Length: 63
Image 1 (cartoon, rainbow, N blue to C red):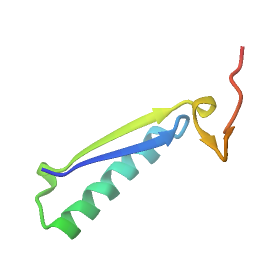
Image 2: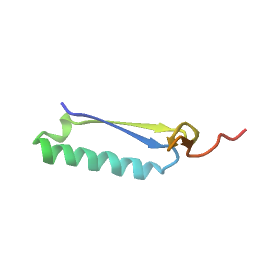
Image 3: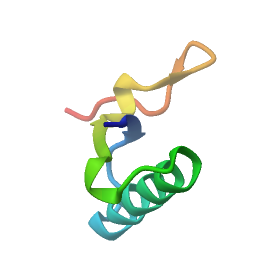
Image 4: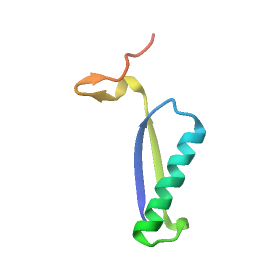
């Protein structure tokens, strides 16, 4: 049973998260020759001020 973990910055619409889940599932089905029902996808949303690129937060927390 493949388990795929994806971490994304919070704030994207539900439809985009669903599309990501569907595409990751399809990729696992195609590349691993498994049934879609066996694929698990876990999407974790991270607040922008907890996500850093090059040592700098993506955004600063608001009060």
